[in-house]
Length: 292
Image 1 (tube, rainbow, N blue to C red):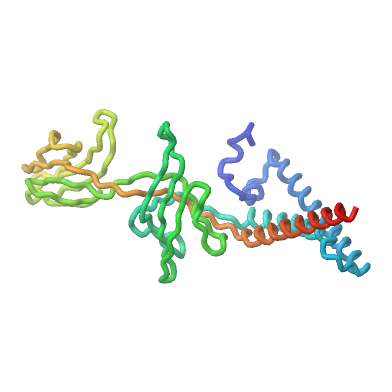
Image 2 (cartoon, rainbow, N blue to C red):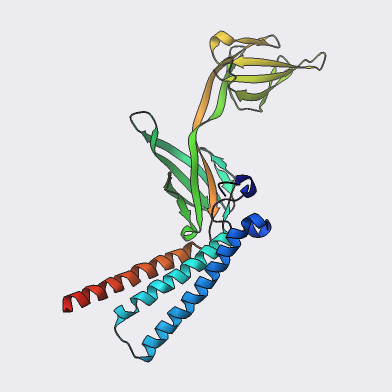
């Protein structure tokens, strides 16, 4: 995959359906590995089953003797969880979430606050996004950060942080002495002519935010483009009225993706098997050492 990255465009996360939808000779390594894991799973299943049957038939009543078998069951569940996750996991496209409700599937979310800590050189250290989630008339609050996703539905649905920052919320224009709080794509009327607030951007020649206005000439019905940088010194005349881009209001925002992985409950069961099985193995080993 490192030598031929162009052959794996579109592959991400745990998704293995990519290899079945794009059957290519270059993916032979995956098919061999997939068959190997199937054979390994079948082998460990029958070996574990045989071990448990032998213990039951010999009427083994000491629970610690079942520790290794429980660990092996954890291996089997892990393989099944990887298979289910590889086939059923899905990730959404990036979603920008600010202080207004944004819908994603069967729930809505918004950012109620954003804090971050930095290293001495200014690089971000930790990000804390105060998230509000609303679904089925109920609202919950949680903290989102890097390596700290918001979990829903017992972990089968994760809200993952991709990046953070501030996004424009509205612009403040002074039109003929009157201050207006407007948004991009709003249409205003100046001296009986319509003016569209087309977009907001940061051109290299200005290095400050500017807005693009598209004005309709009421006589010729032609459209004129006017660029207005932020600041009182950049006041422009639009349809006979002075227009000043006074301020830019921003809102804290995060870019997230929503990941669904139905294998999470099985993964938790596997962790439980590994943990309990290893504790029994350790207990049995320690017990034998003490007896000796």
